[in-house]
Length: 399
Image 1 (spheres, helix red, strand yellow):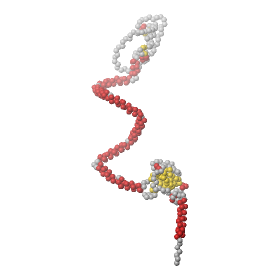
Image 2 (cartoon, rainbow, N blue to C red):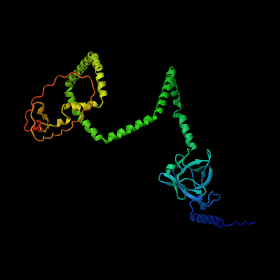
Image 3 (cartoon, rainbow, N blue to C red):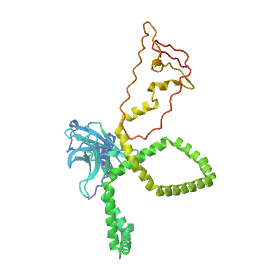
Image 4 (cartoon, helix red, strand yellow):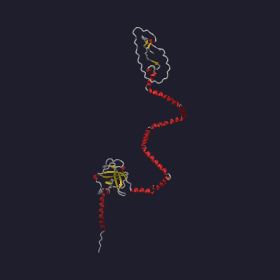
């Protein structure tokens, strides 16, 4: 029996047909415009594009957050990550959040993970250290200062490994032993020191308002000194010559101080020696001062009249420097001195004299006897005059 063997070329041709078809399919798929599997429409999205708003968030590090990672508020999924890109030295992602989720305009964002080894997600929250403002809406951006992330498990384990492998645990024993040596035998003194520290801290806490006011005053003083620094500089420059003058007069100043010291000793000795006499004089002056006090306003009124006695106080205006200029009306009746016969005819009327002011009532203290007043001399310098029929001199001019 003759065996028929199929030619090898036919077999290769038959195998090449499927391979060619597969290649054409891959080429057609590669010619399609998509960036990867994330661009393929996948079912199960937590948010509808028509019922959501988009927000941009900047992060220093997003770990392994990828598109389709969930966005949560209070551990409830409210959206998803739609895009991840690098901007400079940090990352920026875009998230889509449902319209019914209300967040403030100054919301914060963190990258967290569901469990110790779970997937990462973006958590949105209200600000912790400031009051919420406004409302987050489509197109808003959360800045880099309002974002962060939780530490990774690998980072925690690495830090623990560094600590346990010589980071500081080995030094705790040395620190503990040295503290025991310091406190050995000094327990009471350390307890007293801690009590004093507690008292000092309590006192400082009670006086914190005074300390704050003092610091404020120091601040105002510094401001004033800074404003007057030119004047202060001038004063400091002037202190040099002044100090040299004081240095040159050092001996004279020492002599003056020694003399003042001697004067002080002499004054002290005099005061001690005359102390009893001075006290006795003051006791004797007490009744006089009491009477002067009782005189009240009568004393100054009486003194003002005593200056011009026996003339009224207007007589002080007669003398003008080195000359006197006045007019005096006098009524001198010669009939009282001489017996002059009356001339016939009508008499000359007497001129009325002005009334003298009343002298106020003075107190009646005990006044020593005064010496007798000398008699008035004759009236000289009468330039002119008129004598009436009774012998009276009516007008006298004094120059």
